[in-house]
Length: 316
Length: 197
Image 1 (tube, rainbow over the protein chains, first blue to last red):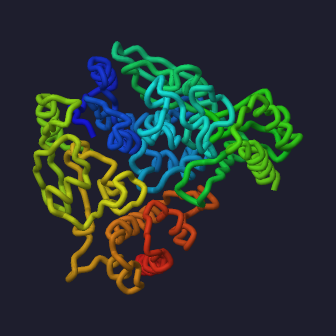
Image 2 (image 1 turned 60 degrees about the vertical axis):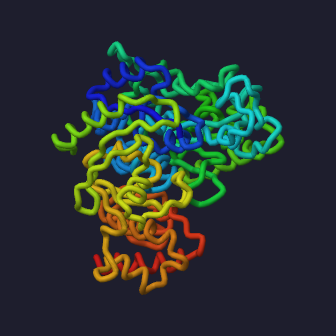
């Protein structure tokens, strides 16, 4: 790990200013992803701005009947929040399907959104990776791509967003709130928060340098059964090969987003009208533009089957 | 959550941490105050020092183990401010004033914690390397169930939590045991949960 200076500012705007003021500065919250990457020298910040003292650790009701999740609410606390369990069950379920108990106790809401890909070529510094080192190439394209993206990727990068929480937030139409060094606040729909790689896969999100996430807001609860179905190589503590976040009625109507398939949570609202017809009609449209590799084409069938299981669960 | 003295210590640490060159292999030092197993401990540490290395290398509390050093194995699990965490994936400097319990703080050979005694009684280990993490995690898991925190296998998110084999196995999935003592660990935890009920 490279050495770094460390500070603990008192307000969100001060934190944003502290990161904007120094090149190669980073926020640290839970640290469960950042420190892992720093040990491997994939991330090499020279200054850490610890945001853990900023508060921002409550889930608050906001009128009318919505919820505002502080950026530093831990994954455990968000999953266990009585309001979230009752009204936004898909979010509790997604969080509980992710990581381990120890990690959920540390990991924060904002940090979870900002976690980097787990593409094995991003982690292996001996391999070419345009996300880690722009212009170096992508070893995954001709490599072992079983875990990687089937849609939304580019010729420079086929990494996935690895998280579960953001997939639920996508199906809930959440909004990310931020503040920058000048104190200017911004609201970013979660649908626009994660970027597609294009020619710049090193840039994961639409945040600007020094822009700090302060909260995630959820609109009014959506009626229906809240389901998060995650398909993975082990029953616990593994990343999704495919996941389905769905809110479904008994008649099959509802909404659905997919995880593990793209550089961001993948939702095609126009396909949701076909949900009562069954999973295949929906996934045919959601994945119409898919460009899978030989290794990960199985994800298309798996997504259809996972959605079928979710629809059956809602109808039972 | 954080007292005034800890806040002052933080300010001092921040000042100290700002003086030396960053981005090299030269250490940037910071003062850190930790409350470990009920004792206040003052340290001057490289900002890079993980909580695990602070305990093992600087406080010589070698019960907590370094397995993977990447949060995957759970051997480093400690209970910090009432919550189990991977001590390898957090910096000591981020824990100014925190209350930290390691395996040494749970109990020793002459005053075993009930979970330690249950691991012995049920053969909940073989080589023992993962055991301190398993025991710290096990103690915290039972507290989480008691506090009503749900898990991935909890059928009804809004019903009272139960201590079942499935719940224990899911909640303990962040603690790996290469010897495969899992079934005996479940038995040990079940016994302690029964005794607590």
